[in-house]
Image (cartoon, rainbow, N blue to C red; front, side, top):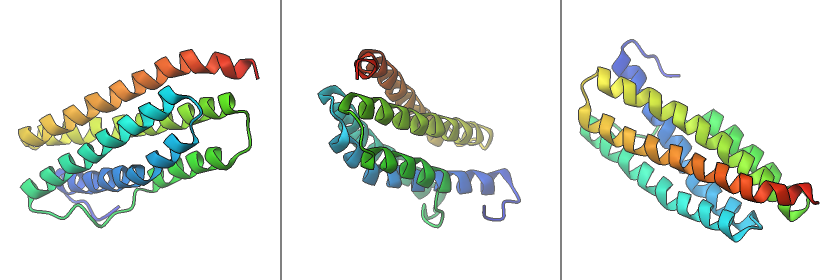
Length: 164
């Protein structure tokens, strides 16, 4: 973490972390979609890719308002989550079991993002960046919806993995 002597410094550092995380996801989601057996899961990953590209744009808008660069930080947590997802993709397993594993990997990512966006949204509110807080809340809402969709898919698809 960069030297953060104020809440604003911490806010910018956390935003950079999320920017890195989202850009890593932009690269990872197409691979997850390609590895999915279920058409619904494939479509879900593709839909989330479009959303993720929008999340990057929102973060860039926030950085523009701050007159700061979004670059300069590598999100190591997302790097690890993406690596775990890559391991699932490479692993030899029944298609239904692979879908279950991909859903689990996706949900770990969503929970990480929800924690990050909830934190920076609160910082934005405390720092009186109301426009940024609204953008961050919109992203947080979308991440929560994606997680709910993954849960719904898990309830539909995971029983098929039991049959394997």
